[in-house]
Amino acid sequence: MKKSNLGLAACAAFSLGFGATEVHAQSSVTLYGMVDVNVRSIHNGGGGTVVGMGEGTLNASRFGFKGIEDLSGGWKAGFVLESGFRPYNGAQSDANRLFNRRATVSMINDNYGELRLGRDNSPAYWNLIMFDPYGGGGVGSFINLFTAGGFSTPLLSGAGTLSRTDNSITYWLPKNLGGVYGQFQYSFNNSPGFAGSATGYGNKQWGGRLGYANGPLDVAAVVNSTQLDGNNTWNLYDIGASYMIGRTRVMAQYSFMNTSITDSWEKRSGQHTFMIGATIPIYDYTITTSYSHAQGTGGLSDLRADMYALGGILDLSKRTALYANVAAIKNRSKAAYITGPEAKVTPSSFKANGAYTPGNMAGKSSVGMELGIRTIF
Image 1 (cartoon, rainbow, N blue to C red):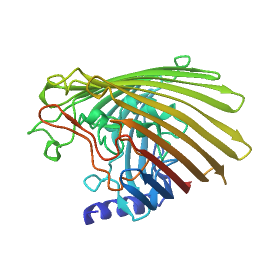
Image 2: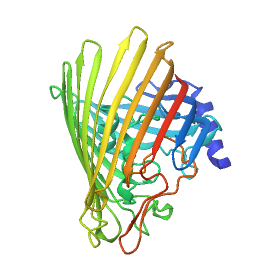
Image 3: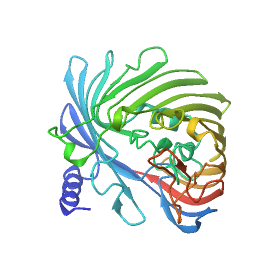
């Protein structure tokens, strides 16, 4: 971490008094965060076993500052600056960005919704994590069948917009629409001469998410499209739903993603992925479980993988919880997904002539186990 970043974080935290501080009668700024760290064992069939520390299973470790100002007339201005870190060594999650998780400023009105500018979650990411018993984190995450191990980006497309987008404009629907919710987002691909472009961040991207929640039912659909180099695209379409049966939440999700990056070689490559799972509360304990399946199409038609996950969460208080999870991915043919750290895993790739070269995890199993603690402040 650069000294300037450390100084900025320290000064900000000191000025806030490590808590909510009233700036004046109609505005406030709050420091918040969470720490999630675990001991994790990952056995990757083609790359050996790693035993060590991990983080970010129940919630990614982070600290942030958020503020709101009442502008009168029903309008408010707000901001969020959020930085991820690794509690097992104190490093930033992204050494090149202080506020790597979120950096946004907003105009908000209860009747008209919210207009938000900056670095933010993509609409697709919201669906992927909201209808996943593991919330997109840890060895059992549904996202492990999108980017993990041999596939550093979805379908080897190079798209960096699966979870977050830079240079984005996002509109959130107001919360008084009778259970209807959603957001619509456009992200600029900053080119030389524009602010921020020197870092090389940003993909031109657009997406939208629309959902309905009422009583025990919650359902939402999303579409995201990212422009890649050479006028290629990466697209994701997802629909998820959950239903409450007593205190048990049953959820399911289906996703299809494709990319035109292989158009000149073979048919457009894609992947169908679905998941079914549940969270089952028993007193202060919650059982989590899911089954997921991935099936490739086009140039990746031989890609197939199944993932099984089982875990539990013990709430010690409203802020602190212990958790334990185990998950196994069975890769078949070209699939090379893993449940955790890449222990001697060589990545898959497309060669210049379009030939697909699978990594050393192709067709092999990955098993992950983790035991951790999460606390919120």
